[in-house]
Image (cartoon, rainbow, N blue to C red):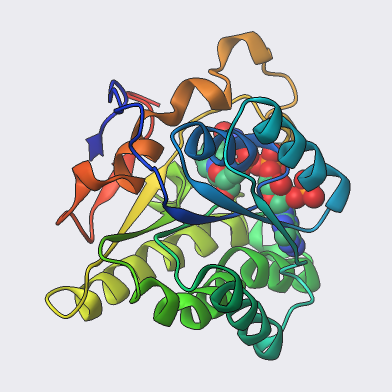
Length: 252
Ligand SMILES: NC(=O)c1ccc[n+]([C@@H]2O[C@H](COP(=O)([O-])OP(=O)(O)OC[C@H]3O[C@@H](n4cnc5c(N)ncnc54)[C@H](OP(=O)(O)O)[C@@H]3O)[C@@H](O)[C@H]2O)c1
């Protein structure tokens, strides 16, 4: 596994880049959106809770970043026409995308396969995998307009080695890893688009607290503290690197 945890970005690393972040209202997505904006990117904040997206919008402006855009979308209910409409809107506004961070996910529950609620299984697979595929299909032509584009799919340690009771969450991340391999090979040599997977590792967010309620949060890094690999993969220093698995933290 590759890790750029100690990466030190140039101050203008992402100047004039247009980057879409899903699940930008909370947790790791919020930190990534702010980190990208702090280095000059215009960030499209996609998520399902408008008040959270508005808060991130305000925080970026207060920090002196370029004005972001808010795109409210619930990945659970969205269908193909919604993704096409989103891509059309982004094209009208920006003309292109330079990066996409697929970050939004839900945990579901931790339980044995035998007793897993089938409807919840489908919800988790849809939000964590199928929705991301549709979003990616719809935005590929926008990324093709960029001279140097990066797609990051968020994985997990249970998406690389299976673990009992992690059900559709683990399976959705395995599917994501497979999609990264398929898409990166398709785009290699015919485009300027690189596609990699990134496992954030144990991080102090609501999802982590839901998965490990007995764990003390102070033992975990905050999202803001794991941004090195997120920046490395989104910026030009990772140009030419595609189809790889990255970690955001060493040994987690
Ligand atoms: N934290 C960890 O330790 C850890 C470890 C390994 C992998 N990961 C991965 O890292 C990514 C971020 O996780 P996190 O810990 O930051 O989780 P989080 O705090 O629960 O945040 C998840 C984000 O996804 C959004 N989201 C969920 N369902 C959505 C939907 N249907 N439509 C649109 N947005 C939706 C949430 O929106 P709302 O705020 O509106 O609910 C939230 O902004 C996930 O892919 C997760 O699997 C995390």
